[in-house]
Image (cartoon, rainbow, N blue to C red; front, side, top):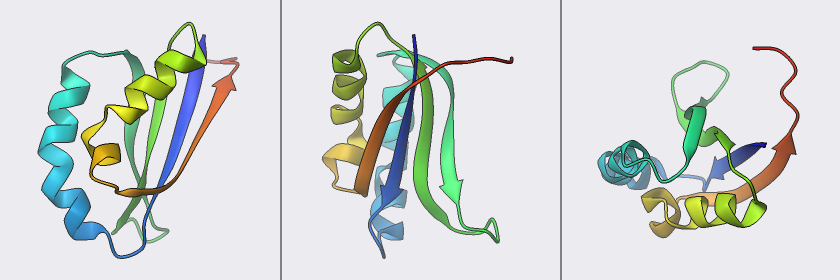
Length: 92
């Protein structure tokens, strides 16, 4: 099953994001879940990171929630909102 994790940063959290990005990347590279794609959300100008997007494969919502809770960006308190939804992949 595919799942989308859509996270929006707290306002003014640029320094918090930058300070925790190396730990976040190391966590993703450790392979705690199958990542289809992921990356930062940016503003319309493409200049400022404003959140995070993940498309993952997992059998249960609980696996996805655990993956998100263990992310260093979550632990750092970066995200203002986290939304998790099942996703029916049609193309690609």
